[in-house]
Length: 265
Image (cartoon, rainbow, N blue to C red; front, top):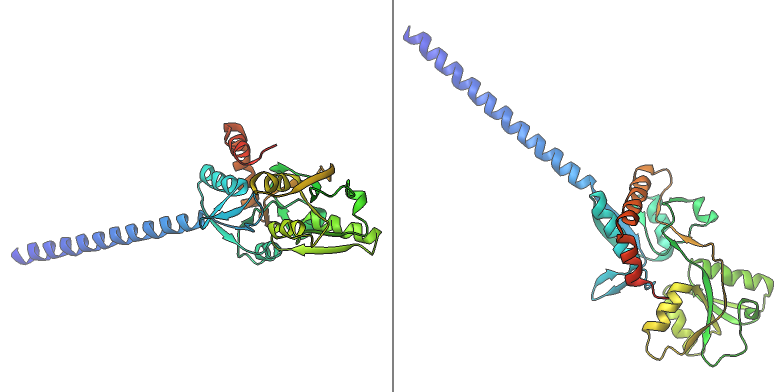
């Protein structure tokens, strides 16, 4: 009888230990699942932070319209956002190789880019403008750039516009710059005759740079230019998430708040 009781107690003890171990294993598995879910909710974003007011680096922080926008999208969609600065021309290859989940950098949606990547819905309507030194009275618009020395940021539609001018007049000199701010400095010191750039960025430069001595001439052209957030071709999960976030921000007023903070007329 005593032996039977002892065996029963030992059996209950073993069963209890096994149950406890199973419970711990379940908790560990749950923790692993939670960690995996948290890791999956991180959004790695590429940008080229040399394009104020859309992106810039101030006090080691990435700031601007695009930076606030992508962080706000991450917040409403439940993603932790990590932003990486890189050359503008490196953004599409980084998307294609999976180094980043999306790219936001004042990037125009163009047929050429759509061959390589997908885009979110448009989030900003842009357009190009010609800028010259304040005392320049000979260049009055795009048509007057033929035969001149003109500059733009590398890889932008402004650079494409400069190349189109050169096609019409091969005596035109085109200089491309990794940083649009450097292009404006080159204009100010007389290294080039004009800069072709997005209107909002040009106006921001004129408004925020002391003694800019730069003016815009002519009409805004390519006004049907739209910015989008780039994603890897076929990555509908990220694209749909971005579109859902944009929709929410426009509905709750946050998009307009960001726009009014950074975009000055």
